[in-house]
Every structure is written in structure tokens, then in C-alpha cells.
Length: 326
Image (cartoon, rainbow, N blue to C red; front, side, top):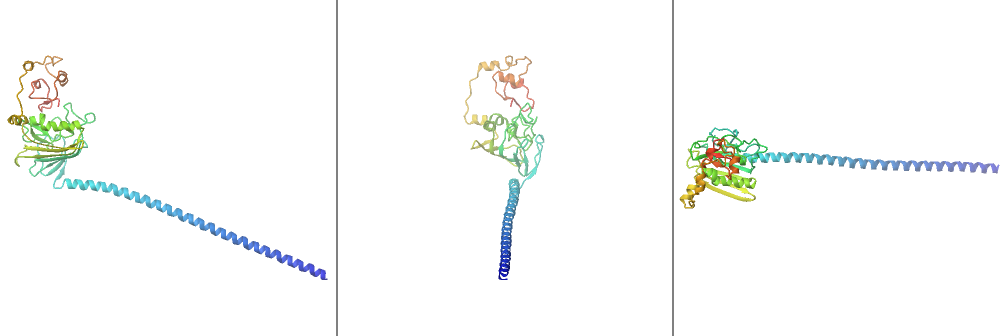
């Protein structure tokens, strides 16, 4: 009996121990699993939060960039528009064909006299007189890519501004064809022929051509009264290779002025030269009685040939401006 009781007691004790161990194992296992799961969930939430923050930052940065670019483009356009508004203040902007031969000018207007994409701005006063021409940059004529005539001009003739019908006045460009200027009345003034072809006007044009262009160009044209379209003087300011140049000269024959001032000396007459003047047999290689530019240059004559030169009458002045090979 006693023995049976001991066996029963041991059996009860063993079963109770197994139950406690199983409970403890289950509790610890569930506790650890729940803690681990919660920690993983927290980590995932942190990662998702970082990704959302990063994506939001990228979107904000992209929006800022787009907005900035839009603002920058808008600012450039507004600045240009504002600059032009300031420049044209008091003037009406109009368009005139570059080859318009009419000598009429409207009062208080501004016109683009640059050929093609060039922007050369010409201004008139209340009397329709051309008083100012400006250009940020002078771009030379490009005869390989632009429709340039054989005469070297964009148009076959120039505007008939009142005064150009004079025998001693040319249809003078403020900005020459070779410098990208057109031929309407907003770029033409009646200019003394010698001044235009061989004087200060010709010198400044050659200087700009030799330099490959110019910047900060400005021409101021003055008149003796409010009724004429024939200027009394010109003032040019422009920059060549970083050097500011200013040319001021009257609309007169420079040779006559120099002679009156005693600045010229008479040259001894070259008898050999005078004997040959009028004889083109050595120049006219094809014997047709006419001299081409090529034949004249081959004979040692430099271009252009003007209507004062003895050879001029044997050559073809196609545009009738008194100049061949300009």
C-alpha cells in the first residue's frame, strides 16, 4: 500500500513538471515571436517613412527646378522686352522692306535696317529726319550664304531720299551692304560722293570689315535745319577689338577741304600715264571694247573704279551708282 502510494505520488509530480515546462516554453516562444515581429514591423515602418520622405524631397526638388527654369526663361524674356521698351520709348516700331526705294520716312519711328536676322535700329525725329542708328553687333555680309547680287549688294538700288538726285551726292548707307545694312530710306542719306567713296565714310567701313565686325555701334546724324534730308555732319562711335573708335566728319568733299587747308600737294603729271589713258587695248583682252572687273584687276587696277576714273566709261556699272567693283 505504501509502495503504491509512492508510485502514484511520483507519477503526479512528473506530470505536473511536464505541464510547467510546456507552459514556460510556450509562453517564452510566443513572447519572443511577438517582440521580434513588432521590431520587424517597426523597422519596415521606418524604411517606408524614409522612402516617402526621399521621394517627396525628389519631387519638391524637381518642382523647384522646373519652377526655377520657368522663372529664368520668363526673366530673360521680360528683361529683353523691358530693354526694348526702354530703347524704343517715344518711338513707334514699324517694319519697312529692306529694298523699299521710296525716300519717304515716317516721323518718330524706329525701324530694323539689318539684313536677315541682324538687328540694326534706325530712329527718326519729328521731322522724319534719320537722326540715329545703333547696333549691339555689326555682322559682316556673308555672300556665300546670303542672296548677294554680283554688284556686292543685297538690292539693285537704294532709296531715293530727297537730295540724292544731286550730281555730287551719293545714296549713302549709314551701315553699308558689306556690313549687313539694307537699302531703304531708314539707312540712306544723301552723302557727298568723295566722302562716301574715298573719305572718312569709306575708311570706317573698311576698318570694320578688316576687324571682322564691330560692337556697340552708334551713328548720330545732324542737319542744318528741320526741312532738309541732307545731313550736315556724322558722328560714329563703335568698338573694334576692344578699342573704342569715334569718327566725326562733315558731309563735304574731304579733298576740297584738305586743299583749302593746304594739306595736299599737286602731283607731277605722269606723261606716260596720260598717254595711255583712253587706250584699253592692253586691258581689253577679248577685244570687245569693254573692260571687265577681272580684266581691270589683271591689268593692275584696284577696285572700285568710280565715275571720275578714265576707265569707268569702258566698264559696266550695273546698278548705276557711279561705282564698279565695289
